[in-house]
Image (cartoon, rainbow, N blue to C red; front, side, top):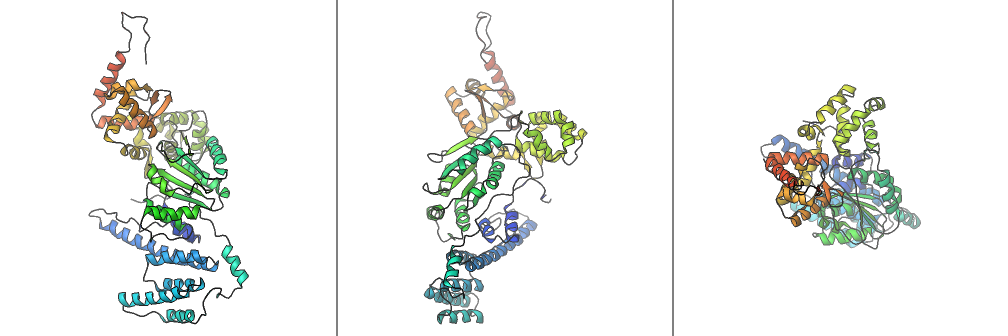
Length: 526
């Protein structure tokens, strides 16, 4: 088994490596949230354990190098406060690293903190003796003597006061933490223009892109990050809320501006520091895959600032007053976006020749962007008319559809499973039974009959599933499942052996709505 780097993916380890290679040590430091796969364990897998240990140590050492280089850069630029924060973060990771202690001593001295610099030497001396039984290196002793003699202090680097002042105010390279720009992005011009207008205005703005799994929320947010980066001179920050805890995210956000908050042990204290850092900045903060408002609240900038926050979420969240959200839906059939997306993977000749077949494929998967991209990637392996036609024929089998829409380590089913697992047991049961409507729309009375719940309970459950982006409201009071979500729900319904009794309840409900012979003029309610 191997990872295919050509597949559609997001890999923070790769972003970390790219930042190191390009010399963007600030971004590399911001991306490092902690030991690689910390607390992850698989029983009876020595090879995996060996690989994790080796990789963890390699990334740890690379992080130490990045922090050391970042400290040097910041010191050279005269950004002594930032350099102090970076080297302290380095020492938190590697307290035995004598060279880092020397960096800290020199920075303290240059910052006018001579006593603290000398005390740091004493701390280092005691630690080396207690832990290793050795004395400081001659170079460290020499540095101590220079600080003691006053040879190293403010402006001791040999530059003039005016030059040092200029270095101190020289703007640092703003952090840019967005994911790699997606090569398969198409369409969404109306959504982009709407968000572009709203997000470019001054003042704090909070926007949320809400939609079902696979609809392209993260892809759109990434595209916007690149398109709008010039509007945010203080950088673009990116936080994956589904893969990191709040404390780690706050550490990462502060680290993007060279501030180490690891010594603060509560969310409130770290959050306060991040808010103070962002108070005078115009930055774009993207919070990806938010599940609830409790995740979001500690990460928000101060309301008096000029930052813009962009959330992606599958849920209708209540964040704060004045925030705006819009629902991102699958491509519309008449937009041409599906064919454009196929054209990113297949030749224009093949797309034109098989236009009708490809459009029918798009219809079968409800024009869901993730499904279209995965299918296009599969067809690109054998880009022939016959392959397109075979795929189209096979895709018409409902019970095989989801199994066909996968590529490498990505699948539509896995995306839906994440949403499903966030439901309660009652909500899961209710959702499964809606598959019996076969993708047709239905009202709350029909849902109540099928799920054996009261009308009030059915209305509540329908509203909740709609808020979770698992249900579409086709018209006022009527709902439907996306075709692929219907396939997913049907798989679950069959697995629970609930299909037949659920179908019988649906039939019984609609039979009660058929007009009787005694009332031939009665209206048929559907």
